[in-house]
Amino acid sequence: MQTVVIDSLEKLMGDGEPRPASLIGGLHASGFLGERLSLQIAVRLDDGAGATPTDAPSGGTAGIELELVGDLASATTLSAVRRVPVSAPAPENADEHYLVTEPGEYPDVLEPVTGTTVDLTPGRWESLWIDVLVEDAELAGVHELTVRLRPDSDDSNNGGTEHTLRLQIHPHQLPPLEIVNTHWFHADSLSSYYDVEVFSERHWELIEAFLRSAREMDVNSVLTPTWTPPLDTAEGHKRPTVQLVGISEESGQYRFDFTELDRWLRICREVGMVSIEVAHLFTQWGARFTPAIQVRTADGIEDRFGWHVAATDPEYRRLMVALIPALREHLAATWEGRVLWHISDEPSVQGLEDYRAAKEQVSDLLEGADVVDALSSLEFAEQGVMDIPIVATDHVEPFLDAGRNPWVYYCVAQDREVANRFISLPSVRNRVLGRQLFVHHAPGFLHWGYNFWWAQFALKPIDPFTETCAGGGFYGGASYAVYPGPDGTPGYPCGTACSRRGWPTTGR
Image (tube, rainbow, N blue to C red):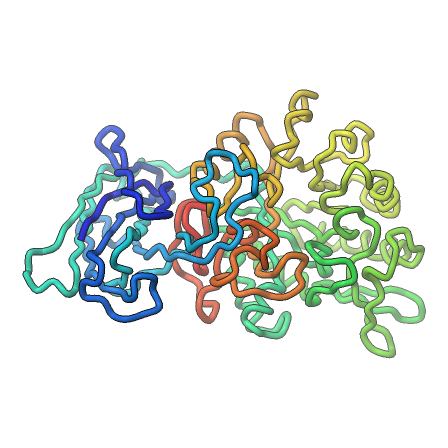
């Protein structure tokens, strides 16, 4: 058995020798109270030694025994870094910094180690993920944490090998994140993956667990399905209905029930969210149609709005005239945090007039509200169509040159020479985003896929453990930052910059 301590930003993609972690001031890592410190131990077992037949590439697995020693042992959790299939790791014109560009199985899932042994695949480098989270001020200072490893087939009693990690905990707590950090939360992914009825008690349990998960990775704003968000959905296609606001029509008058919304807000408040985003008022990529909104009538539930209704339809304006003031009044009375509104996601410059027409449907109703949208054209801001733009990171330079400091976002298209969280990219390519946000005084960051467990355009649900590329439409790692844990049970540890709940990803 060979072992090497490596940095949390390293990814063991192939058979190359792992790079040992560098010590800074004699320390492997340092951080503040409540800040997660992460390292890895790369392990390579002799091929075939003590193997149990499986479907693993080498034909079997072998176990190693683990032991933690030191006064931080109780604050430490271990995970095995597992590989997932990646059919689309990189664009054809990938820049030189991608770790891999060919399809394969690459590390991403952190599988919690729940006992004293873990199975690994002999014949290749794998890694164990170490998380240390100290919240007790009495434990501030420099500590040594010893990790002992021994093949469980080793009867020589030689103790295997061990690594002693030197960690420093500073006696201070970091202040709350000041910028808006939103990774869009998809409630329908939870109901579809776990096969539960929308807004059943089980669905609410899952919503709370994964909202708490998002908050623990410092997400502080949550996309709220006041009606089913019209996002990443093929034209004419419909995603499962997740509509928190009950809408009915009686004698030609719209009436609203905010009971389910209030439950959502209560959970957001309890887990520590400070901002919510009302679902988009018009469809993505052009704002030409209305979102899928159901209305209860005397004859039952009617799919009154959606792809079959134009954005400028007078009936939709009639609904908005009733709904937006009522919703704003209710949120002002029941939600103490910030409220963000969206018109349409990612309109192009060619769709400027459609976006303008859609916005005119509701602009008088949103006077004084914070309206933000992801886009890439400075022309929207220069013409006053958008007050708070969220700009793609590879299109932000003209905004900065014009003296603006906009929110930024990245999605699948930001695939060359900019930060992103694809599995095939080095983790430093993700970590650098924090410094860029700080240097340019960005007031917010948006990512569209906290848990988008769907094929591209939401044409079918996927198993994120076996399909990491949204049916081939996205690069692996682009569409979700957390895996669904077994039975929806929260409480698993995580890697750098990702959720502590669910089955999280490594450094993404």
